[in-house]
Amino acid sequence: MCLTGRKDTTGAPLVRCENAARTYGSGPGAVVAVHGLTCSVPPGARICVVGPSGSGKSTLLHLMAGLDRPTAGRVSHPGLDREGTDGLARRIGVVFQGPSLLPPLTAAENVVLPLRIDGVGEDEAASRARAALESLGLQSLAGRMPDELSAGQAQRVAVARVLARRPCLVLADEPTGQLDRATGCQVLRVLLDAAEELGAAVLVTTHDPRVARELETRWYMADGRLVQPETGSGTGPGPSTERSPR
Image (cartoon, rainbow, N blue to C red; front, side, top):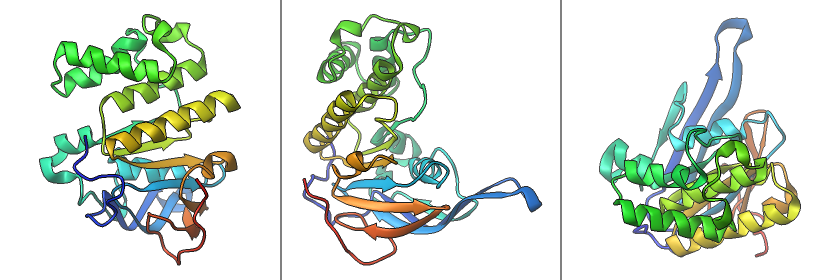
């Protein structure tokens, strides 16, 4: 359970980007994926980063998660780094866009493994995994191997794996991209409801306007830059404009 509640948006930002940039390669062939972004994610935020493929959404998410490092500027976690790097890893949950389950493990074992690595006892880890899978309608698939799951089922298992760890910040990269509309709505609703219960902040990337409407704050990305931020509870480089209806 996070120490900051859903309604507490006054604490230290969970993530702060200060002129953060990411360039791949060098010389004439260098690709700038993210251009000097300054933004932050406060406790309890509900943020959707909207933009077309190649706009830099995934790179920004990876920088915020600590999975990649900026080539310029700085990314920090003032509200999360009380326990150092190891604590930070436990406090951030990442839902990846592509396949991320370990092939030798069952669906349930994929959910249990990060908990055991975190030091959670065997019985509690199994209980939390069962609850997370059940919340996503996956209890009957717990014993299946990843290659026996559809792409949509595998993505829901990946979401369950994140929720079972009870993070303070959930970063989800196109979490509904491989799902049909009805299943995508269910997964997003479970994700947001679980975050509400945990007191966790959520940042989702998407190019689907239906997903974007479910979150209070929308940031738009184009060519590696944030443009036209619509700010409810997150802070980006611009004035507050529209709050998305709930």
